[in-house]
Image 1 (cartoon, rainbow, N blue to C red):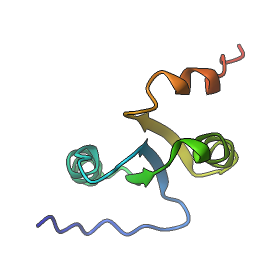
Image 2: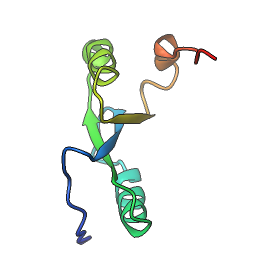
Image 3: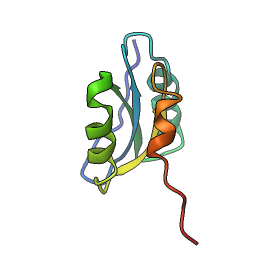
Image 4: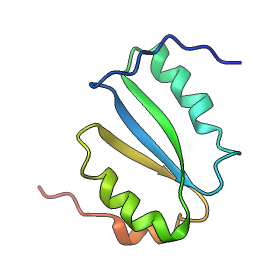
Length: 89
């Protein structure tokens, strides 16, 4: 059992861990304690997303102020490329 004293507030940034199913995700178990140990107000949140919901999820996430980024796993590693945007200089 992992016990964390990380208090999630309105300032907390989050990384969406997107895939389906999510039961085997290990990134939150590794990254959340690490972020806490370096005093980063950042958490990884597993998001079980079915294929039909991927586009609405990505569109919704990118409009959130506290969205920091995403970890993309199976089955969406190739499909996510269509959502990537080139950073403007």
